[in-house]
Structure formats: C-alpha cells, structure tokens
Amino acid sequence: MSPDPRCEMEGKRISMDIPRSNRAGKPKVLDPAVSTFFVQLHHKLQNSLKSQLRRLAKDNDGIKSVTSFLGKEKGTCAGLGVDLEKQMQAWRENPPWVNQPPKIKVSVPKGSLCNLKAKVDVGLPPDAVYNIVIDPDNKRVFKNIKEVISRKVLVDEGQRQVVEVEQAALWRFLWWSGTISVHVLVDQNREDHSMKFKQVNAGFMKKFEGHWRVEPIFVDEKTCLPFKPKTWAEYCSCTGGKGRIGSKVSLDQLIQPAIVPPPPISWYLRGITAKTTEMLINDLLAEAARLTSGCDTENSNKELISSKEITENDQVEEIRNIKERWNSRRRNAKQHRKKLLTAESPTF
Image (cartoon, rainbow, N blue to C red; front, side):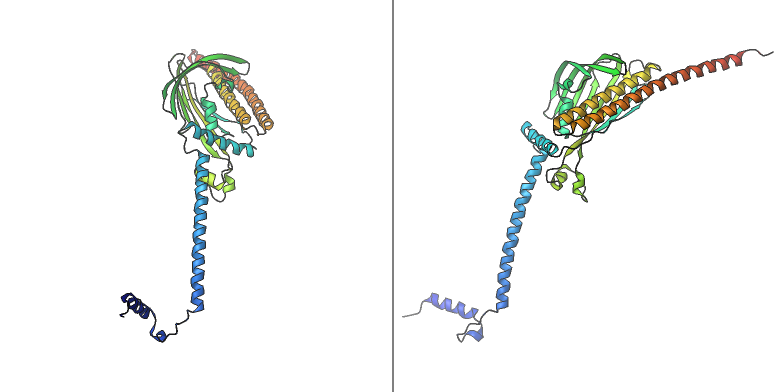
C-alpha cells in the first residue's frame, strides 16, 4: 500500500521546520525568558488597545458635550434653546456677579450734536442679552420706551432680520422730561449678535443711527490657568462645561439734528442723551439679574442705585459747570466788545 501523498508533504514540512539537532526525536524546549516576553507583550498590547478605546469613547462624549453646550446647531430654534438653557444653568449653579457702572463717552464730531459710545459687562450669555435687545415687547424691560407704535418685518432670513420699527421714547434729565418719536430700520443678525439701526425719514433729526454689539466674556477663565482659552470650545473643554459665559455689550450712536442748536442748549441735549442711554443700560442690568434668578439681586440693585446717585450728583455738577461755562462765555464776549469799542474810540 503506497503512502498517502499528503502525509509525505506534511512530513516534509515538519522535517523542514525542525532544526537538525532535533531530528533525532528530542524537541528543543523554548527559553522561559522569551516565552515570558511574548506573554507580557500580548498583555501590554491588549491593555493599550483597551485604553485607546476608552479614551476615544471619552473624547467622543466630550465633543458631544461641547457641541451641545455651544449649540452648533444654531440653525434650529430647538438647538438654540438647549444651548441657551445650558449656559443659563451654569449661571444658576454659580450666580455671584457684581454689576459695574457703564462706561459712557460723548464726543462732538463736526456738524453733529454728539457721538455716544457706551460699554458695559452683563452677567448673561450673549444669546440671552440679544433676546432682550431685539424683543418686540422689550418696553417691559426698557422704561424709556413708552409704546411701540408699529413694527414690520421686511426681511426674514432666519438668523438675520430687517425690521421697520416706530416707537414713542421717553427722555428724562434731572427735572426735565418728554417724549420723542423714533422711526428706524433695524438690521439684526444673531450670527454675530449685532444690531444696526438707522433713521427712516429725515425730519427734526438729520441723522440718528448706530449699532449694538454683544460679545462673549469667559467669566471663569481663571480656572483654565495656565491655559488661556481663545474659543468657546476651548473654554467649555477646560471648565468641563461648567464655565459661565457673560456678555460685553457696546453701543455706538450718532445723533445729528437738522439744525444743531447753539450752546447752552446743545450742552443740555448731550446731557439728556447720555442720561437716557444710562437708563437703558441700567434696565438691561436689572433684567439680567432677574433672569439668573439666583443672583444676589439685592446687592446688584444696591450697586445700581449707588451708581445712579453718583451719576445724578455728577449731572448736578455738570449743570453748574454748564451755567459757569455759559456765564464765562458771556463775560468774555462783553470784555471783547469793550476792547473793540476802546480800540475804535478816537484819541486826542
């Protein structure tokens, strides 16, 4: 009986794999150190693979958390609502915040009444502040808005809208007060939290235009030290999604009447403009304290009252300065006329 060819092949393969010294029938035992090395290498590879898989899963959860917190899906109202609610929750869990008085700067460009620039930090996320500013019913927040006469949406592109608004606005300056009609086109863009406004028809006011801008503040960025976050994603990552996001609100406004009144009327009008803007910003700060609902509202209100008292004292002093400036100008004019008369009188 002839041998099976497969057995011959297997025999050949075996004889090829066995060293010559072992062909006699005693297989060589593998070195224990080598065996231990391969066993340890196997375990290390397994542990490394498991660690990488766990880290990948953790990073994936972190990315989902950051995405959820920052609201990358801002194209939908639902995504925006979840994003804002998470940011508001961070404020409710860690509410301490002290309102600082707004910084208001008034300059006088040639041919205009004034160019007003105001800045203030608000203890609310940008979306929440922006919602207050563009709210059609924001007269409940801003006490200087008496009523909204008309409001019409001309362009609606989701994140951006162009709205025609007519309002009756109140102004108050010390013991003076009154009402003025404001009819403007408003271009509001949630994408960059900006709002531009411009007067529709020139009448008493030749120019009434400006813009609001709301930018994020990383309130708790000190917890990230020595790392300094530059983006929302970096900030959320280093604070574990617990970092509060505040807002830096800025207003730039140009006012130019058809006829610029002479001093001292123009000085009083600038004071009225500055005071009205300050009232508006203080209303915004008060609403921010109410929305966070865990804030030390009492202390915040005390700060605002104190700031209001200081401002009113400053304005009383400003009134005195205006009167002094006006009296000084009249005295200088009289002295100038006397000098002219003296110079023109004949000498004998």
